Length: 335
Image (tube, rainbow, N blue to C red; front, top):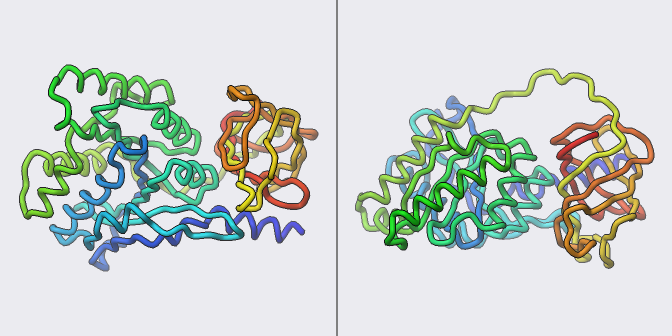
């Protein structure tokens, strides 16, 4: 039985790694450059996928990526394993100094699944904020989750500035974005914020032109090279202490994915499967406005374990009930 659990959890974590939209780097020497896993996050409609397409097209013009159309990135196929699916587009490109593996998940739920399960590998992130709308709740949620998942560095692309006539309004959005980063564990005051229009850049590049919007993509790539540290293999970890309580981000599988058919409510006591142990615990939902979570939703939970377990922040786990996996989680805090 434990081997089946491990295989099922591994499949869940790796489900999105074979996304269909790829822009492979053209040169074999790319493997000699430092590899950085970068994800693009933000509110639906902020322009994440358009920005991804503009980056790839710009680097393809330099011979540092193979071009790929916007439609292929915007509508990636959903890869499934054991009934669980994540729709994610994976593209790759180079700069003069780095090789980037870039993941874009057009739907928010796929982003949440990807980070909670670990299927979306991210060392750093590009936070896309619309200058028209500012940092919306979905963007704040993504940033908070990214920090909990160990995404170490972020840069900001303030998109759609061409749609805002008053520069003061753009300045206000930038301040709000910096505050959002600071409130979620990042150094907001020191973060690099690039202003531009991803759509304007993409259209210019498609027409063989340059201009300020294309320059904003150049500035973004330069900021990524300059401000984001290169991921390094983790050193030997110290022994982990046992804890009886923890808080976590969770995603609850839909019934079609093999999850529960009824709401998840406080007092529910499933089994929490960590890489090194299985332990039963009762949940609470301190941030829920409805007092419950439905299958297919995410939720922040507090867990009281029946037996203390060696766990630490950033650790991922499966939630099991009745011999089946019904959710996945990411530890945020232990106590």
